[in-house]
Length: 256
Image (tube, rainbow, N blue to C red):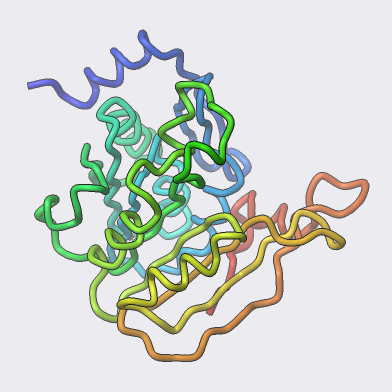
């Protein structure tokens, strides 16, 4: 049997790895030097996970574990469960949990196979930063190392169905995605969830949102709430003061 640590060592040889710091140095993350690298979307998703100690957070498509690690450092005492179809990256995510002294489990499994295939109890929170594209004709061919992170081979519905199945009744689903897919996300999650709260994420004050954070409650019935947007940048500054505090872990994103 191959242990996760052994898999990680082989990945390090086959795919060059580099350790980077997130949340102002509070999180250590080993990830590939080429291909997809965790960035702002993962940081914003983790900042909006308002989980309590003892509760379980499941992440679908966890990659190297950036969301899991940032969530665990922000919210000590939570249980972490990652699902990643690439066995090599699942092993890297497991290594990163240990690197940050976090308790959790990472499963090498495909979202397309459904939540029931995991044989795990439903989580309190099910979160995801799904691939942003499901139409190969809508995206110039990405580098091979990025394709799995950018292209949802089984469509966005496979991801929303997985999240709906993975969370308990009354539990929370949280996604970050392209703003132009908001209608699709609401329709797909709306089959079994409600009480939506939507946070638009705008790059600058004079530009439209490019991302949205969508929070939903399984079987929730409350009206949809469109929250004031998060502004990432202001002219002449890398980030606004609020965005910088969020990215460094000094502030959370309160979606209510």
